[in-house]
Amino acid sequence: MAILIIAEHDNTVLKDATHKTVTAAKAMGGDIDVLVAGKDVEGVSAEAAKIEGVRKVVACDHISLKRQLAESMESVVVDLMDRYDAVLAPDTTTHTNYMPRVAARLDVQQISSVTGVENADTFVRPIYAGNAMAHVQSSDPKKVVTVRTTAFDTTGEGGDADVEAISDPSGPFKAEFVSEELTESDRPELTDANIVISGGRGIGSSENFAIIEALADKLGAAVGASRAAVDAGYVPNDYQVGQTGKSVAPDLYIAIGISGAIQHLAGMKDSRVIVAINKDEDAPIFQIADYGLVADLFKAVPEFTEAV
Amino acid sequence: MKVLVPVKRVLDYNVKARVKSDQSGVDLSNVKMSMNPFDEISVEEAVRMQESGTASETIVVSIGPARARETIRTALAMGMDRGIHVQTDEDLEPLAVAKILKAIVDAEGPEIVILGKQAIDNDYGATGPMLAALLDWPQGTFANTIEKNGASLSVKREVDGGLQTVKLELPAVVTTDLRLNEPRYASLPNIMRAKKKPIDAKTPGDYGVDTAPRLKVLKVTEPPARKAGIKVENVAMLVDKLKNEAGVI
Ligand SMILES: Cc1cc2nc3c(=O)[nH]c(=O)nc-3n(C[C@H](O)[C@H](O)[C@H](O)COP(=O)(O)OP(=O)(O)OC[C@H]3O[C@@H](n4cnc5c(N)ncnc54)[C@H](O)[C@@H]3O)c2cc1C
Image (cartoon, rainbow over all chains, first blue to last red; front, side, top):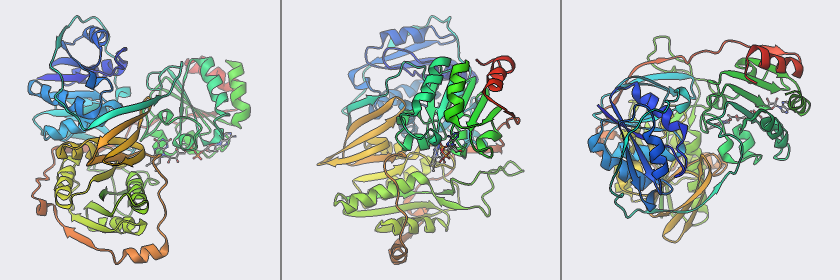
């Protein structure tokens, strides 16, 4: 059994989502190689070579992979799949964009966002906003899997794998990159942070989000949001936590002015400790909070910031 | 230019799914079903394309049980021109759905197919890109804004780091994200008018597609439950608990 893991990176830094995906692959059993596809990725490849238990790093360095767009990624991965029985990638937007294309080309059904690996062909995945867990066994000859990385521990370093350069993706491609507007922040990444503080509609405006940010900076936390806060334009789209946004599982999640709709809970209910601050004592968020504070957030949050 | 929009009938987003006691699946008897919310956004976008003169015809497809016709009617009431209902009682996987959709695209010749980025029941998020690959078309997933410029389509996408804009050669597949638009409610006159719009009745067999599932559902279980927490009186107590009981700050 040979498994290909696709690295999560930005051409400069190898992200921990990769190490967690390796952990998921280890539960399947077999040899594990890591694909680093991007532009100028020598550094990232060298980092991937250090992941404990990795047999080999396969590097594809080409201008068409700089943004890891769907068609070029599909081309690289599909070409490699002669050599592998399974391919796993983190379920971030980079990979959920093209992994179903890979599955369709290989004529297999993708197994999306797995939170458990029982063996080489059986996986657990949340469905219905995480209100049910499907245990599925794949009969396909090759497995195409995306991994909900928050459900897996990281794999440490200690490996010393070789790096093999492979040939360029075979274009031309019918989509091209035009521009991007990335959210700048010095705070930890939402999906990686030990503490996440999220604000909802109750915050009321983008200016008011400053009180969430002040608390976050005091605690070294990442800032998230509910869909309602994103829709209202208080914060950018990439702050959204939930069924259709990001999944997080920090040590501490603080939900402020968030009611606790099932779609929001889907993205944060696996956090270790959950705190809710809401003025409505019947808000559903209190049903899953370890510590609930019924209070006006405009009074409680500045007090909280002051006290820590 | 024709625009095709596939829609799925799913458990309403306001209803919490209940796992059946025999662990065979989720209980869908006597619960409210609706159009997948992302598909409403797709329908809205197609109707707007027609209203602005970009689209000449809008076609809605649903693959599902007899009652999926109601979902097609909803899309017709929102303004789509005609429907195709591929009737099946099987719970088809995205791969099978994408194959049927490919056959429909081959027959109808749309230039844009707009799908939801995911269905909120099985959360696969796979059908759109699968269809694009089978057609060998480019794709713009998680669309926040769509703009047609001549023979190409500009799609601003909601990605994990922010927003990314790509330019696609047509024909192309687009999948919708939450901020693309706000779907309209169908007015009563439009609901009446929709009753007269044509819906083609088909079956998966008409398209010669093998729909056998690739995944066997061994069981469907409850997610791990969280134990009930406590309410704290004030901020001081909260800080004390977080420091001394939970040890997280
Ligand atoms: C297809 C689909 C996908 C979705 N995906 C997601 C998703 O991924 N993530 C997500 O979050 N949602 C998602 N939603 C939306 C979800 O259903 C809810 O609408 C949303 O989570 C509500 O956000 P909220 O809790 O901020 O707002 P509300 O439900 O309006 O709650 C605001 C809360 O703030 C409290 N409040 C107000 N003022 C104060 C104050 N001064 N002090 C203290 N408390 C105050 C109120 O008591 C209330 O509980 C999705 C919905 C659909 C249909």
